[in-house]
Length: 175
Image (cartoon, rainbow, N blue to C red; front, side):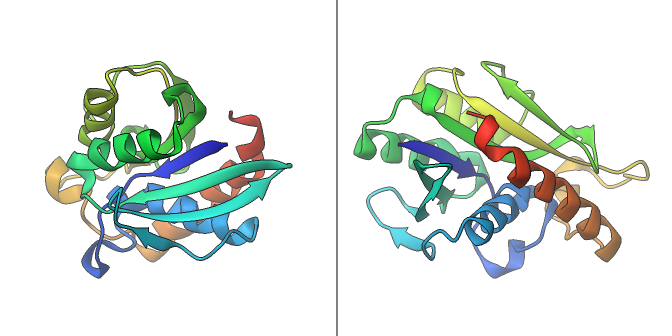
């Protein structure tokens, strides 16, 4: 069994914000591969959905702990399902990558992303795969803390949806 973890913040006020790119990607994966409906699992404080991609079982996880505490939910899920960190993919926003692009990383530092750093801290390792979705726009003038919590414009959302579509198309080759 493999885990795909999307990072974001819970709650309607954060829906479709830049920081919730990971949640948006999981919604698309779940829909595309006909996973179960996301349900809250109290033991891990996360929304989970189960399904199959290319004959392999996957669990999609949306931590409900807020971004900077994502590691708490991820650690609980890994302990509960007895999964090793190297068997997870974490999908998240990345300010170092331009909007419309994404990058795959493995066994790398957090790059300043507090959600990823929380996971590294809780797991005691950086030995997992990350799919980093670019959210940087050329006209970014807002301070970072505010920028990541802003909603994508309609045009930006179209670009992000295109990137997520590409990720979904290639997800089975990422692990």
